[in-house]
Amino acid sequence: MKTLALHLILYLASVCGLQGGISATILIPQPIVDFGETETEEWTTTDSPDTDEMYMILPKPFFIMHYNGPDYELIAKEYIMEGAERDCNLLSLHKIKITQEFMSKNVLLDLRQPIPENYSASTLEIAGYAALECIRIVAHRHHHEIALRIAAPVGQEEQWLAIQKKFAAHDKSKPFTRKEQAGTGQPATRPESKSEGSDKPQPESEGRSR
Image (cartoon, rainbow, N blue to C red; front, side, top):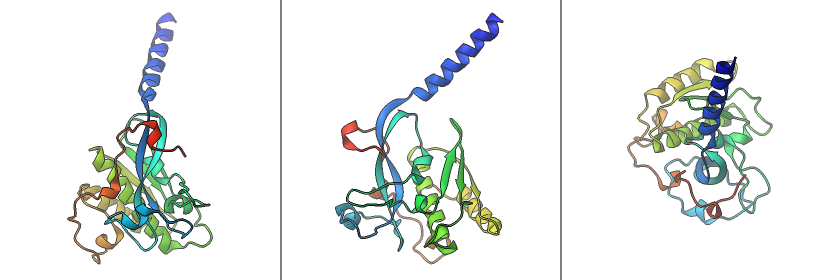
C-alpha cells in the first residue's frame, strides 16, 4: 500500500512539474477581422502573405501562467483589439475550436459548431483555412511535428478529409492558404512573414492578457 501511494505521489509530482512551466507573454498568430471600429498602424503596415478579403493574420499577445511550448488552442481564442468593442478573431466568430492533447502532437481542428448568423458555409471554409495557416505557423516556429485531425461539419467530411491530407503532406515552411491550394494564388515559395511574430517568452509588460 505504501509503495502504491509513493508511486502515486511521484506521478502527480511529475505531472505538476511538467505543467509548471514559466509565466510569460507570448505572441499567437490569429486571423483578425477589421470591422472598421479602430484604426491600427499594424493593420495598414503589416506585410503579410496570409491576407484574405475577410482577415489578416497578425501576432497577438497572451499572458500564460504556465507556458510549456506550442499552444494551438489560443489561435481560436477571442481577441478584442484595442479601440474595438467586439471580438475580432475570425475563428472564434465562427465558433471554431482548436484542442491539443497535453504533451502530445495530436491537434484537433473542430468545425462542427453551428455556423453563427451573418456567416455561411463559404466563410467557414475561409476561416478553416485561416486556422490551418495559423496552426502551420506555430508548428513551423517550434519545429513541432503535429498530427492534425479535422472534425468537419455534416456533409463536408470528404472535402475536409482531403484538405487534412494535403496539410499533413505540406511543407510547413511554406504558407498553406486557400487560394494557393486552389491553384489561384502565387506559388507557396515565399519566406516566413514578419506577421508571424514569435511566441518566445516576452517580459510581462510587453503584452496583455485576454
